[in-house]
Amino acid sequence: MAVIEMKATARPRAGKGAARQARRDGNVPAVIYGAGEAPDTISLDFNELWKQIQKGHFTSTVLEIDCEGKKSLVIPRDLQLDPVKDIPLHVDLLRIGKDGRIRVAVPVRFINEALSPGLKRGGVLNIVRHEVEVICPYNHIPSVFEIDLEGVEIGRSIHISTVKLPQDAELTIKDRDFTLATVVGTGKQEEAEAAPAAAAPAKGAAKPAEKKK
Image (cartoon, rainbow, N blue to C red; front, top):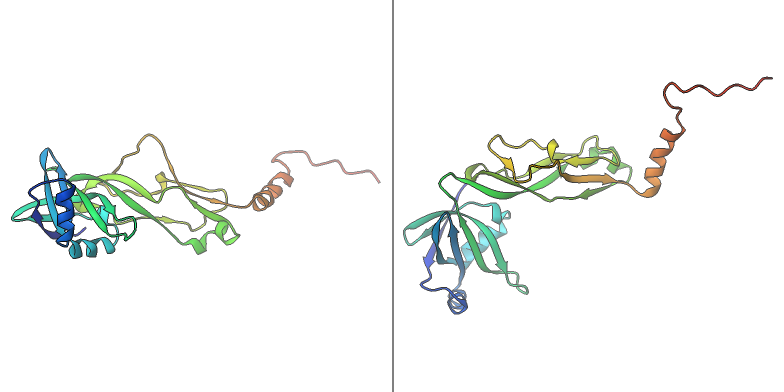
């Protein structure tokens, strides 16, 4: 994953008044915190920041913030948006520590829906998790986890164990094989699928006696 460089200016003081002044100047107030260092209050150029947000996956994008010569490697942790205008009001940025490992949410994408027999017959893909949280090096963040739906029938659940993780990534949830999605059908579809199984004789069962003529 490429590191995005962004310029910033130092904000001499925190608080609502300083933040409002930064916005009036065409900037977005932000705070850099973490890695055992004191927080830095900074301002980011609105247009530069907005450009990065519009690219998508902003909270899993690694940034190198150059604040008047002091460079910090960070990842966005919280983005506050205006509830009406939907534009950035404030950003929290987490410093990346010396070991370079970070906790990040990776989006899940489902492919080959047309090759799923269950979906072809009218089943519905019920997505339980749109993201999977992992811990990995900042420069090896997976862009997406792809789930192949080829051959998936109605009633099938797809678990995290089906996803191949990068060698240097680990799940934050380790105590269970959690569900990512299921393919569910209507009640009639499920009854229709169960009917043939119920009608079929059990393996090894005796055949019904034929009536004597």
